[in-house]
Image (cartoon, rainbow, N blue to C red; front, side):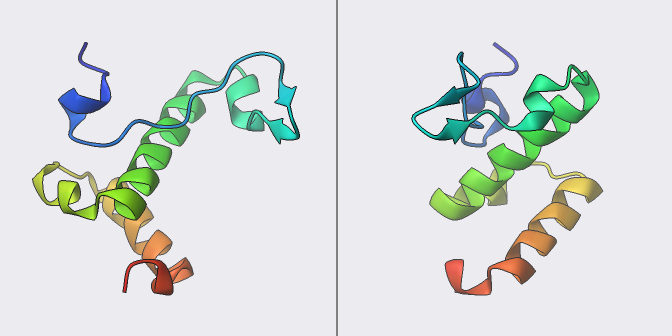
Length: 84
């Protein structure tokens, strides 16, 4: 339950299943890599991205690490029109 989206205050990261490619949608390579640290990083970043794009007000109530803040700044710089 600690990893559920509502307990972290962020929207949940995208979910994927088998097969690895379905209707031209492919599972990101990082999820197939077996590298648990990279998978966790990807999940956190995707949760941050979805929250920033869909419910940015939720970010005001979430404790963000330096890495989280750096990722959000990079996201804002790369797509400034999405949130202005």
